[in-house]
Structure formats: C-alpha cells, structure tokens
Length: 449
Image 1: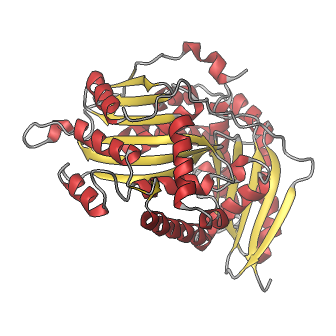
Image 2 (image 1 turned 45 degrees about the vertical axis):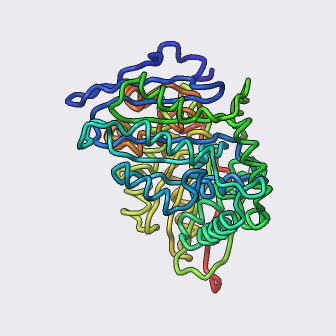
Image 3 (image 1 turned 180 degrees about the vertical axis):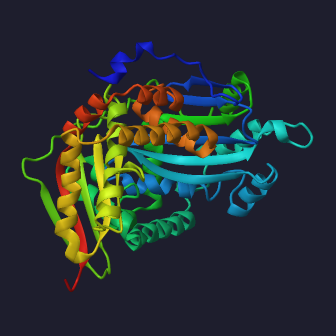
C-alpha cells in the first residue's frame, strides 16, 4: 500500500519542528495560486533567509536542455534590471544578497528556477524589512525577462546556450560522476530517469530565442510552481510578500499534477556495459532496482539497508571491499528515493574488475541472508538519523529536502522521518534487502587494457 495513502497519522500542516535546545520552527504550506505552492519554515535559528522558486516539469529528453537554459537566461536581466550589473547593484542594496539559477532532478521530475539568500529581517541595521524587496526582485527575474522582438534576447540566449554546452561537455572530466551518469543512461535507457538534468549537447545547440521563449511560456502556463521560504518572518507576512512578488504568474484554472515514476523490475539477466577511455583508474558502477521508494511504507527500512550496505564508513562495502580486501580505492552506495533505485560507485584497478564486482555482489547476498550484526545496523541507524536531523542546521539542505518532499507530495519533515527510522527493526531491514535486484553493471576501463 502506498505510504501516501497511509499517512493520516502524520501531523497536518502547519506542523511544529522541534529539537532540544533549538528555537521552535513552524512549518506551513499554502497554495498561493492554483498549482503554485509555498512551503515556509518560520524560525529564528538563522541570520539569513532563503527563498527558492522552481518550475516542476516531467523530465524528458526533448525538453531537458531547453528547460535547463531558462533560469540562466532569466538571471541575465529583467525589465527593470536589464543587465547583470544592474542586478548586482540591486542585490548589493539587499545587504549583498544572492540569487542563483538552479537545475535539479528529483526522480523523473526536472526542477528549474532560482535559489536566493538574503539577510534575515531580524538582523538589518536599521530595523527595516528586506523580505518584500527580496521576493519582489526574485519574482521580477522569474517573470519579467528582457524581451527582444517578442522573445528572449539573442545575445543572452547565445551566451548562456554556449555556457550550457560547455557544462554538458565538462561532465566527462569528473570520471566518478560520469560513470554514474552513464550507468543511469544504460540502466534507464527507455525511461525519463536516464535523461541528464542538463539534457544533451545536440538539443542544447538547437535552442533558439524563439524556441526558448515558447518553452518558457509553456512552463508559465502549465508547470506546477514550488516556492520555498526559510526565515524569521511570520506566516501571514511571508504569504503576502510572495503573493505580491508572483502575482504576474498567468492565471491557470489547473496545473496538471506530476506523474509518479513507473516502476520497473530488473531483467532476468543483468546488462553489462564496458566503455574504454584514456583513464588510469577503472570506474565500476552497479545499478539495482529496489522494491520500495519514498512513497512506500518500507522506505525507512530501505534507507537503513543502503546505509548498512554502502552508505556509511561502517558499511559492508567500506569495511570489507575497500579496507579489508583492498579491492577498491572507494566503494559506496546511494539511494534515489524518488525512483526506487540503488547505485554502487567504486574505483578499481583494471585487473581487479572481476574480483571487485564479485565481492560487491557477495556482500549484498550476505545482507540478503541477514548476515549483518546488530552493531552494524545501529551504526547505520545513527548515521541516517544524524544526517536527517542535521539537515535542520543548514538552510540549503532544508530547502533541498523540502523540494524533494514537494515533488513527492509528502508532508513529512526530516525529524519525523528520523523518528520512523528509529523504529525500524533488523528483520525489516533484511526484508528490504530482499527487494534489491541487479539491473546493470557499467565499467569504465582504459584504452590499452
């Protein structure tokens, strides 16, 4: 049964986030306009406030690059601040605030927009309030771009399109990250999850000011919009400031909800992909299909299974494959909660490929058989719980967490999720391991091997 269907027992918005010794934080969620939602964390813990705004749109090979370009072009200038110099001067007047373009994916959803940081109203020298002005500037950049001949500026589009192509090409320079990208592409070749957040060079090169404008208008009229605030302002003032700032959003009766990722089982025989490149160290990546995701009741157990297997420095992969047997320079696992996929990343000597692959899989089989000690489980639990609760220490991590929850349509905060992790039993973790099935093995090796 879906976790969404079972969560009546969870606290409804507004909720209170508490931790001993911390200022209390109030969490509110408000629909500002149809399909436009605000998640706000009201707390006096920080000296800065964070504002974020994102279009949420299905990840698609044909539109990923053009979507990724939109925030960069929007950030180049607006109607009242037509140059980057003018924007910089406006930010200086806001105590040196920042607004940066952001492109992220959550499962099979692409999130494009801005993330800004400003001095919190409680710390201005003269007692003035910055929230309305900061939100107004972000709203203008998001909704009132520089227009030439009825579309985006030719100069701004070309400059940022070239920068996007450079960023796409540069991804190959980080071989560890590149190997995971290639694993996703091969494992999910016919699924949106296999599409890179920046798209690809060919689609990027084909973008024109006209096609970029058309896609921007499409997002304005159809995409759900997620707005985030974290700071000390009271809920009513935050709502009013952001309603004013984004009042120019087109009025839509309905913005279609985001689709859930389709579940897919691992093939009976795993896919093996080898790629040769001029590298001195091999990169071995393995992709597993999991039987749970963020919507599942079993998700906390899967989080712990990932931590026991390869997600911490006390994990099976780290202690055995890396430290004890010295088969890898590094070996770790990560969980993509919105897709129900676990990926292993490792660096190996070319000649150690078979031995490392066999041992990585052997450690998983041991976990499936319940061959992990209670101290291993408790070490994993402490790591997961600490990571969740320490997210409330950093505004950027909080924003990232709540963006993922908004994509999933889940109201549960990091503290509440940590409490569920605390309750998971060893038997539940063993059952979560049983759902993991190998799908794809990717190996980046040298040209002369």
